Image 1: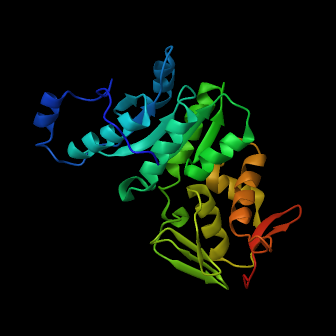
Image 2: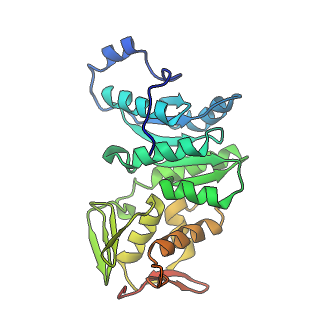
Image 3: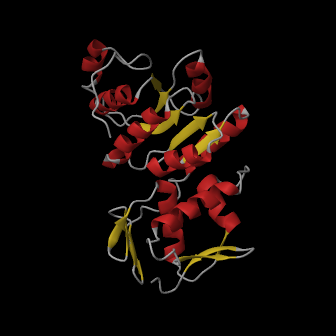
Length: 269
């Protein structure tokens, strides 16, 4: 990730240095804020409307560098970031830089991140997902659906039974998944996976050999009450298989049961 340089003061949604110095004295637990990345032609206000009813404060920035400064000021004020929304007006490089920064911080590793895009390049979507985004949403999209998707992302961490970060270490043959370390090992080497890939893998290795229907996996990732393109799950499975392959041997750990879903082999090797 490129080194960050000092840039302009954060634009909106956050107190001035004088106000901040007064507020820091009160370190009580406060509701999570939403961090919004948007730039130009009223895009910020359009994106704010998706978040306004869900978070007591929405902080808007233009660049990854401004985002880093904001995260530090948020922490100093005793607050925390609870959601990341990247408008389509933000360049892909800025999105990738900030997500890499966020996923490298323990207190932001699990913060849901949604990226809005006007592009149709599937490779760009994959790059953003591999960087650590939880969802890439093509726009224009009906406002109600956008809000529903944000709700679904927020619900993922609310149910303990669905928490992929619950303390556990799964060993299936040469595949090791450690939730405490958010670590995946395959044949002795570390495999870097995205948050959604990690959720899929944890679900599969909890019960080796069991076939999980596509519908069940999609409901786990995106919720049960609105539709998502079936191709989205295939993209994540493809990404996992690619990372669990070697130059001379394709992935055989994750098996497709045609017409049903996916499973991890009882003895992964």
